[in-house]
Length: 281
Ligand SMILES: CCCC/C=C\CC(=O)SCCNC(=O)CCNC(=O)[C@H](O)C(C)(C)COP(=O)(O)OP(=O)(O)OC[C@H]1O[C@@H](n2cnc3c(N)ncnc32)[C@H](O)[C@@H]1OP(=O)(O)O
Image 1 (cartoon, rainbow, N blue to C red):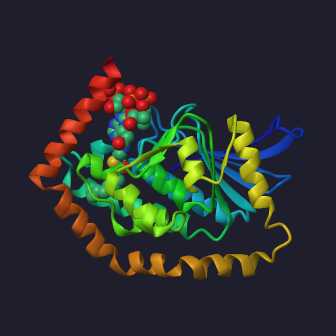
Image 2 (tube, rainbow, N blue to C red):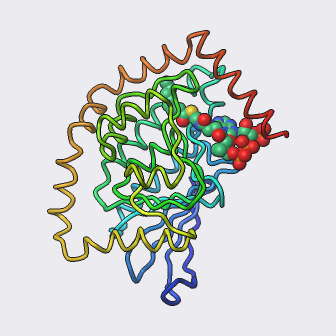
């Protein structure tokens, strides 16, 4: 994919920083050359639904951030009210056989890249973050969320089942008892509830403040040996990463079998219809 590179001067909370910016259609990477922190922005209207292209873009951008020796990665959204609506249901509803395989493989790749990223990661959750959106946020090491939005793994409410690696991300943030109950209930948490339970680390009044708090978190590693930090993170996350790496073919087949069940297709169709009806009203 062609990428346009540009150098621009952008205003920032503490002064004008020269920022290296890389844009694709669906994601933007901006590296602040004073802090060395990269902001990865999802930009797929209307709701940052995670389709094949956005997932591939995300993975490519994460690789680029690791390659350009950024000091950290902040994941956010260009949409003022939606971080990500999760997986694009259109990829799973009456799916094309080849595309749906590529889609799930791209999701596995994006998760492996983000959860296993060697750089410190933080999510500035500037909007609703259901299901796959919550997966991305909980794959990061730190979360700052704006008020009056919701976050959670609501899969059971859609009649679908989150795979084990979705649960792993959730479990890396919440105690098992809380995680199990929330997943079984398909519970969406408000910002206040998420803060209380520890699903997010901080709340912020504005997106700028959220980005600043994420940058401060990444700054806490400034005096830590980067190799020791990266290897420590890797060891903490190795079991979950290795599990998906070693079982990704079975995971794909399991997903395909499940998603092609008539009852699951029917449920997705009804859910999509309800979303469309709601959007019209
Ligand atoms: C075995 C499988 C395991 C799979 C694991 C994970 C599954 C997932 O991630 S499934 C996705 C779960 N996501 C959701 O349940 C969120 C659904 N969306 C919403 O709740 C709201 O859209 C949201 C709060 C995000 C935003 O609300 P609004 O700002 O009011 O927007 P609209 O609801 O009006 O939506 C605009 C437009 O987008 C379409 N839409 C929304 N979400 C999705 C989605 N996830 N996939 C596909 N399309 C989506 C919605 O239908 C509207 O479409 P139009 O009517 O054509 O404008």
